[in-house]
Amino acid sequence: MSSEKRGMSRGLTSYGDDGFSLFLRKAFIKAMGYTDDALGRPIIGIVNTFSGYNACHRNVPDLVEAVKRGAMLQGALPIEFPTISLHESFAHPTSMYLRNLMAIDTEEMIRAQPMDAVVLIGGCDKTVPAQLMGAASANVPAIQLVTGAMLTGSHRGERVGACTDCRRFWGRYRAEEIDDQEIAEVNDQLVPTAGTCSVMGTASTMALVTEALGMMLPGGACPPAVSAARQRHAEETGAAAVRIAADRLTPDKIMTPKAFENALRVLLAIGGSTNGLVHLTAMAGRMGIEVDLEAVDRLGADTPVLVDLKPSGSYYMEDLHKAGGLVMILRELKHLLNLDCLTVSGRTLGEEIEAAPKPWPQNVVRTAKDPIYAEGGIAVLRGNLCPGGAIIKQSAANPKLMQHEGRAVVFADAADLAARIDSDDLDVTADDILVLQNIGPKGHPGMPEAGYLPIPRKLARQGVKDIVRISDGRMSGTAAGTIVLHVTPESADGGPLALVRTGDRIRLDVAGRRLDMLVDEAEIGRRRASLPPRPLRPEDDRGYRKLLMETVTQADKGVDFDFLVPPVKAKTPLAKG
Image (tube, rainbow, N blue to C red):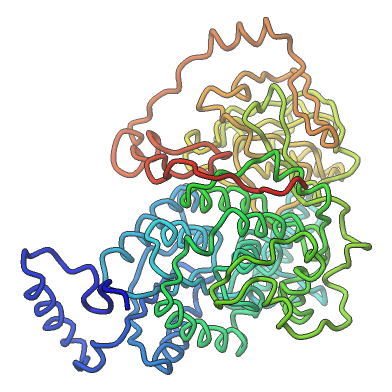
């Protein structure tokens, strides 16, 4: 029997007398109405991320109650506590700016309060990675519960859902194909219920890769937010939390290099959000595991895109749930997975696949012989424009633009883009390449999803639907297009992207995994020598922003704070691909 302190005796407040510390703690917690019997039981912490600003988390109070029920049925004492809640559309300048703050909040609250295990309830894009980053660092037994995706709506007989359809209809509105009345009607239908985006955006991506990683109970990624299945899964999660507390099943036993390889394999197979790569890199980094981008790219060679969900396909998350969920994908990838990886269920991934219900006919998950896309959804690029790497979601790009050379049309930052992109005087053609500088981790700051540059209005009116776009920022997983992202190093950190000028020729070669500016080295050297230092904005010199500006890492390292990342002790993926 372990001598480690448990329950109310864990992490006592420092008063110089442990007996008094426990006495005082119990005196105050009894004001919540607990008996000595309740306080003598294992404690399951429940992270409550409900917020009036966060529709993705509208169902959190119901999930908290279901988790409590599951924990209490197993004889434990569940105690909920709040942390920061982030919503993609309600975080200035971007939710990514605050992801690390949420991770710190989560980690420190797990450390500060007595709990034998913790249930992490999150859903919207940055919340799940933030919680898992914090849990990895705290290394207390932890289990993830996602809020689930929303159901779809209907616009004039057409099925619609956030947020691929948000962007599609807004593009049509910018091109003056639909009027003010219709865009207002669409706005009423895009988010008809609580829950996360209903397509393969970042929220859905993180739900699926978290289940594949082993940090979520099997079958938990796909049930819709408003379904009874979601509630039942929450109850089962509460019960599982009691088991992992008893077994001391800490994140370091689950979040291993081989488990991250499984998660990366699934990321590629689902046509997942490019944000998923940044988040998995940050999560792995907290365990001292470095994500090898070249190895990720090699995985894509034999990992086809199998899931027919928007933006790479046609369906929505509720359809994937009805089709059987993640296990349908895992079965197709089984020969490529590390089946001996432990999960929070206490069983291995291979055992969970075998225990799952038998498959049935469906059209949402393709077979490996009939994929949506022959290679993994994300390709990693190198070249003189991105010596630290860049990525493109090739499964959602225009095949005709995957090998393209064009003239650069450069925007200095997001403000410059907003000021000029819709001007009829903008010198741009469909063959040009739009370049947006200074929207990386430090440049904006926070690496916003402004990498999805809108089609210039003058081109949209001509019917242009896609154009090559390059930036050091991110884009939403719900977006599609021939868009190069995460150019590293970023412009604000002296990366080559800062040296591009309008009129330069740029060559994109996705098949060759190259991104190059066709400017001679002597001219590049002259431009670098004359590049002014990044101006220090007054707001950069105080508070959380100062912390971010001084310590945030680049996209290839997960955009985490360098002081939160332990030394590298392993790499992932390990497979040759």
